[in-house]
Length: 194
Image 1 (cartoon, rainbow, N blue to C red):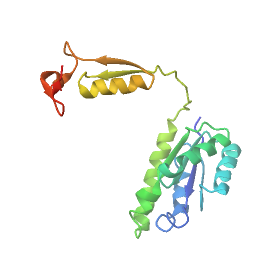
Image 2: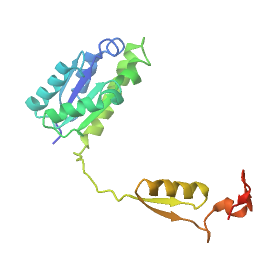
Image 3: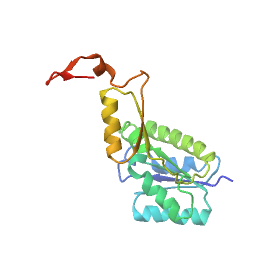
Image 4: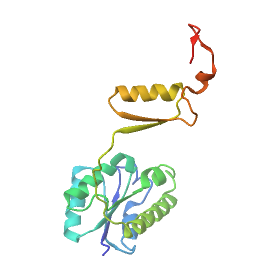
């Protein structure tokens, strides 16, 4: 059952000066699966996050699309917001309308708004097929595989072993040493390389 909520952020004037956020929210409300769509001045603020939490509970949303700035900036904020509302944090899709619409079309509101509508439409379509993900912890076997028994491989194997980990050194030739084994003397002491 898809009950998608769309939340459009103004980002102060960063987005709202170039994208008609109210038109975007109205258009998003018409997309398949969307049961709620709104805009708010700062969606990442505490009141904005509270709005998302309350709406998820009131409208029984199972997926959320946020049209805002880069996910790099606030994805974790919004994931935690979904968790606060009791929703799987991975049932979130972010449409980056600040960098991809507002900032690249600053004086072309109609074009920026059309592009934002298109990005949100895609985010809603992607959300349609989302399934919950769950974090899992897996035991790690602390064994290193070093491929190549030349100087770099041998030194790497020694460093890892000195750090207390098991090392497996693999060399395709019958002996280790790589190019060093071909030399008869090494600089600066002119010692035998073998």
